[in-house]
Length: 115
Length: 109
Image (cartoon, rainbow over all chains, first blue to last red; front, side, top):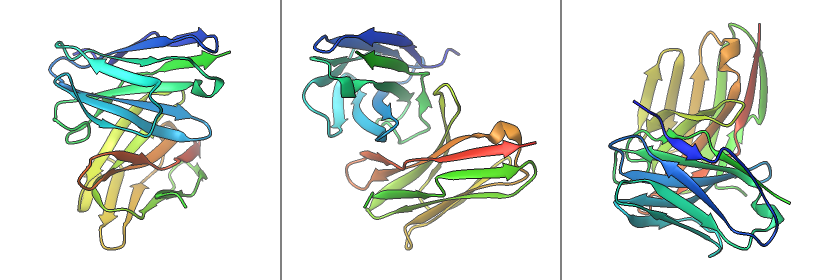
């Protein structure tokens, strides 16, 4: 069974640009959640989707957005990139309605560098 | 003060030692999770707890809801246990997650 797949693995963008990250959950998983990890702030919850609906959102500015498609694949978008957006972006999938109702499985992450 | 505090921040051990990592929280929770993150970023979910104790191999996790405290124990530690261990709590009624800052464990042979 394939794990959670995130693409791309590495990305370098310039300040002011926008970026789209992709997450393909494990087959059969309908819940996808996104996290930002930085050395200074650690892991922070971004948002959570179940059946194409956003269930929860963390405390991030509106520049951070996401969506989930009917096949459960999810994308997150960051517009008007800032240097502080440089981070490891992780997604996780699970079978439960809530991201953490059941065991969550993480992807390897996308490392975004903003220059 | 952070809502989820972990201690210690860094831990060094010799192979075979018994390890304890602590997590204290100040909010109402529906569950607490322990995660393991290896160099390179991959995260593995170790335990989900809402009460009592769980055991998986050499790993044991306990939670005391009244004291708002959880511990992760590793018996007979091994160099492959070297990783960052992260405690995360799911807030009661919202299921939003708050993460601790992690404990970096290094086990030497």
